[in-house]
Image (cartoon, rainbow, N blue to C red):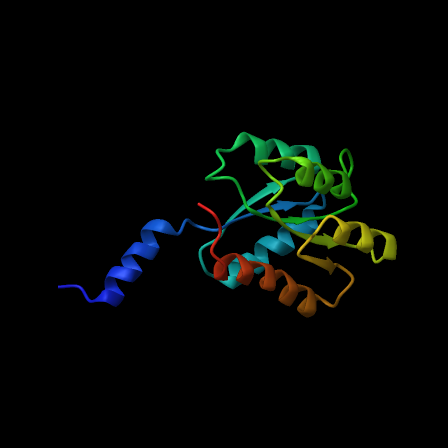
Length: 152
């Protein structure tokens, strides 16, 4: 007979879906950096990549609500639809506004940082940090995805 602990773990496995992270990034070097960090991180996390804000919205709106990425890591300065514009559209969308968004940008401009936080981002990570510090920041986003209970 299973213990209460075993039953609880079985229930958690059935009800907890694999965390999904959407990376919105046009720079292939940065995409590879995040992929490398994820490979070193371990854990169970699905990573999708969009090259600009418009593609990210297509991914988010094209998936069933239960399977869409809930956590987003986005650059701001991209060709086509910028990260700022994408974040604004997400916050205006009834189905997407509860997304957790982290900014991952080379911009250290006070205006960019203020604008991001006005749209309720969870954090603002700058790419100008030394590689080890930047990797810790990206791992923090992965840890967040692993640690919190996201909606099913």
